[in-house]
Amino acid sequence: DTGVSQDPRHKITKRGQNVTFRCDPISEHNRLYWYRQTLGQGPEFLTYFQNEAQLEKSRLLSDRFSAERPKGSFSTLEIQRTEQGDSAMYLCASSTSSLRPLHPPLDGYGYTFGSGTRLTVV
Amino acid sequence: DQQVKQNSPSLSVQEGRISILNCDYTNSMFDYFLWYKKYPAEGPTFLISISSIKDKNEDGRFTVFLNKSAKHLSLHIVPSQPGDSAVYFCAASFSNAGGTSYGKLTFGQGTILTVHP
Image 1 (cartoon, chains in turn green, brown):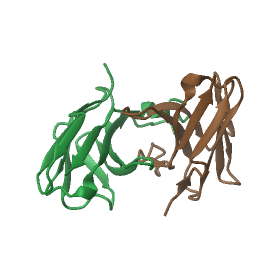
Image 2 (cartoon, rainbow over the protein chains, first blue to last red):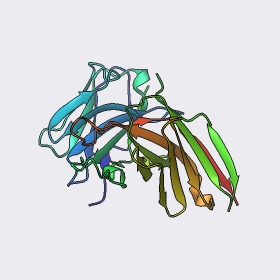
Image 3 (cartoon, each protein chain N blue to C red):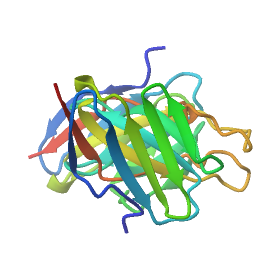
Image 4 (tube, rainbow over the protein chains, first blue to last red):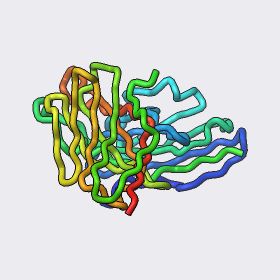
């Protein structure tokens, strides 16, 4: 397994167009997350899935954003009617979940990020 | 509201010396903390983590200290090497009622570490 893969690495689009990004997580990870990072800031949580269920969506995720993970494997993030403010790095991550609350893992639950998709809206 | 803060945007250290990166948090529900390292055009890479049941965790040159009463954690890198130059993020999470990882990470703004030869 080569880690978390994201496609494309870069996307330039005109304002008002729709874009879709794909994320392939580490195969044995049941959780998949989307984050957004702008210049000078840390990653901000957008949404996450456990298997195919979307368990939480951030207030940052407007109704122009939709994420899916139809078979509990890869995920897509679509942005409709893009705006210049959507320009950012979109990061995907995957992890396991722990069933041993008294023994938290020291490996960060294997929380692994992909290299991201850089979106530029012109 | 910024629940996790890294108040130093940058840190410059001589090779071989200690680097100390600091992080403060406001949400007392956080019980699991992680440090990530990020190079340009790459995603963050996990470095080290600590649970709130501990006050110290060590892994090679990296040690994380947690002071729950002060809601403060720090990452020590000893000795620092030029290859450590990167952006460092601290992140926090909390467990749900079932004790499983809540999953969502809240990140600080990052600290740019430069290690000079």
